[in-house]
Length: 128
Image 1 (tube, rainbow, N blue to C red):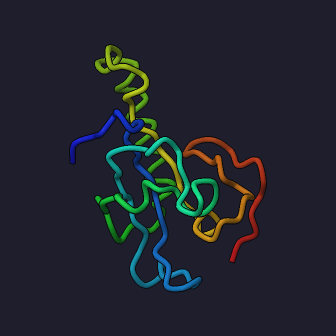
Image 2: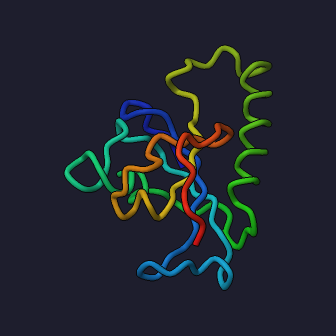
C-alpha cells in the first residue's frame, strides 16, 4: 500500500470487530489495520464526530490478534527506534501515526477522541 502523504500521514491502528454494538473479538480476534493517509483527521459524521474517515480506506494487515492495542504499542516502539536511527531523514509530517479506534468513536461519543497508542487516556472509559 502506497501512502498518500498529501492528505496526511499514514495510519496504523488497532480495531476490534463489531456486529451492531456487540464485540466480536472473542470469536474472530482483533485487527491491525493500515490506512494510506489520515485524511486530515476528519470524522465520518459531518466531519467532526464518529469514526475517523481513514477507517473507510483501511486495509487489514494482521487479523486474529488477541491484544492488538498492546501489539500496536510494541510496533510503535520499534518504529520510534527506527525513526531516531536510520529513518531520521524522513520528513516528520510523512511519518506514520499509531492509534486505536474504539466503538465509542464509531458511535460518535466524544469521550476519548484524541487517544493515541502509547499515550495514557485522559478519560477512563467503562469496560463492556
